[in-house]
Length: 334
Image: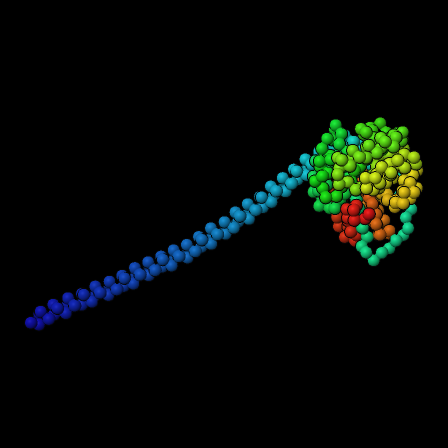
C-alpha cells in the first residue's frame, strides 16, 4: 500500500512538472507570437507610412514635373508667338517711324499743347495698338490681359481677315491709311489729297460696312493728307456722316485736324505719346512712363504703339506702373 502511494506521488509530481513545462512553453509561445504580432503590426504601420510618404513624394515630383512641363510649354508658346510677331514686324516697314514716311525722324512730332488739368478722378490712359491685321497680333495683345484698344488696318490681299477679327472685339478702331509725304510701302486704297468728296465718302461707307461697330478712326501714315486742310475737310465731313470720330495719330506737326475739327464743332483729340518710335524695349518702357506722366498732368492721355514683340513685352513688364492711373479703352475717354 505504501509502495502504491509512493508511486502515485511520483506520477503526480511528474504531471506537475509537465503542467509547469506546458505552462512555461505556452507562455513562451504566447510571448513569441504576441511579439511577432505586435512587431508585424508596427512593421505594417511603418510600411504604410513609408508607402504613404513615397506616394506623397511621387505626387509632389509629378506636380513639379507638370509645372516644369507647363512652363516649358508656355515658354515654347511665347517663343513661337514672339517669332511670329517678329516675322510680322519684318513684313512692315519698322517701328512707329514708318508712320511719318520713309525718312526716319530724330523724334516724333510733338503732341499738341494741352491745358494742365488735375481732377479728383483717377487719371485715365488709353493705349492704342495700331496696324493690327492678323490673328497672331490679336492673340499676343489679348494675352497681356490689359485694356488695349486695337486699331485694325482695313482688309487687303495680304490681310483679308482683319475686319472679321475686329468684329470679335467689344471695342476697336480702324487704322485708316492716308497719304504720306514720302512713303514707298503705301497701303492699298490709301486716301490721297487729290481724292474727291465722292471718293472719300465712298471709302468711308465701305469702311463702315466692313466694320459696322466702328466709332473711332485714326490715321495710318497721313503726314501729307492731314496737313492739307481741304482734304481733311472732306474726310471729317464723311466721317461725321457715319458717326465716326477722328483721332489724330499726329504724324506731322503741320496737321490741320485741330482747325478742321473746330470748324465742325468737334473736339480735337490726338495721341500724346508714341511708345515705339524706337523699337528698343528699354526705350518703349521709358515712353510708357512718359504716357503715364502725361495722364497724371492732364487727367487723360493717349499713347500709340504697334504689335511688335518688344512693345508688347515692355507693356507686360510695365504692368506695375499702371497702379497710379486707370488704363482704359478709347471709348472711356471720348
